Image 1 (cartoon, rainbow, N blue to C red):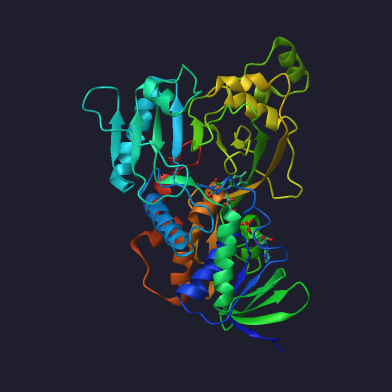
Image 2: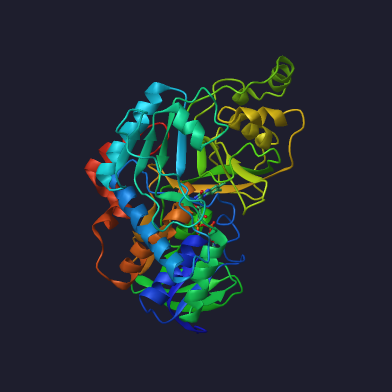
Length: 454
Ligand SMILES: Cc1cc2nc3c(=O)[nH]c(=O)nc-3n(C[C@H](O)[C@H](O)[C@H](O)COP(=O)(O)OP(=O)(O)OC[C@H]3O[C@@H](n4cnc5c(N)ncnc54)[C@H](O)[C@@H]3O)c2cc1C
């Protein structure tokens, strides 16, 4: 006999499960929502992120989804007195290559058409619009859209320490970061006040009766009857869908990040997320090069990918910087502890030297650093899943890759509408599994770029 009945059971208390619980309880008034997770909420992937957000994306559905998600995040920040420290410092994509600067401008022009806000060009000519620096704290009143800084002097004035080689940068303005833990805690607190029950159990089975979801089994052997089930299991999204005999087209990629102390203040403390947008070769000495060859680390010796990036972390006086550089692209079935790369922290510090040459002052004596990470759960085209599974009453919320913190509220908004039968916004179809049944979409997928980003 069922020990209880829930209207909706959610598997997974990461940021996506937390946001889904909030939407169902607080915004839609669903009475009995149970959130199951054997781990403490937000402790698997959602506390490992760099906590950044941006509305610059290369296609219309992603821009619409992220604008909606950021709208919700801003609403929550406003109503909570900014309990999770939302800022709008932006993302700065820096390049030493005029052709790459032109490509950044094109991407900004395209994204303007998708609705990210206006592009302002600053190339040092008279009549340029004024470049408005980003405030270090808060977001209200800060510009949106993008600023193309094609005047190297202006760039170095506002971002001191950037390499003399930089020819310019694209500053994406509806972007910045927040505390993901605090946002998640706020969502869960509000949902609890509205009746959410959090159960520290793993979902081990999903039952179907008369062709639709009727309950879940938990790892203590108990059973919970329910009217609907949401799979928000992050890296376990596919195995949890597998409990219903369903297949999800997702894979998991290992991603690390490093936190390091920057006592010399090389990275400007008021800057946003700083991204070196060019490929580069790390400047190893001959001896280091021989050593790496002997170790078989050929991945570190040739041309390395774009997007070594980092940002200041912590309030005024904090010396910490968070930085990432994905030069592996390792796809595996998720295991914990995460596979290690002993050299990761040092390689990222060296990579950051392409953008901030004074980073080389740390090479003789590497600063204290901490490496952690998690999995990006991704679809082939790096577009999330938010909608029904094939089994009536079952839903999926996930595959949020490296953008789950910024997308969680937008995903929860869609999944909640699917679960409750509310009106679906136009962009919802782009995030359902049904998109893969569309022949035109399949043709687009066949033309995917190497990064897998549609
Ligand atoms: C290094 C790194 C940097 C990142 N930087 C950013 C960033 O700057 N901005 C951004 O937006 N995103 C970023 N991300 C991505 C973001 O962290 C993830 O997309 C997001 O945290 C995924 O959230 P989730 O809720 O889907 O998964 P998770 O947080 O992994 O939560 C899934 C939960 O499901 C639970 N679960 C699994 N199986 C079951 C089961 N059978 N029953 C019950 N519960 C189950 C797990 O225990 C887990 O708690 C980054 C990620 C990494 C790794």
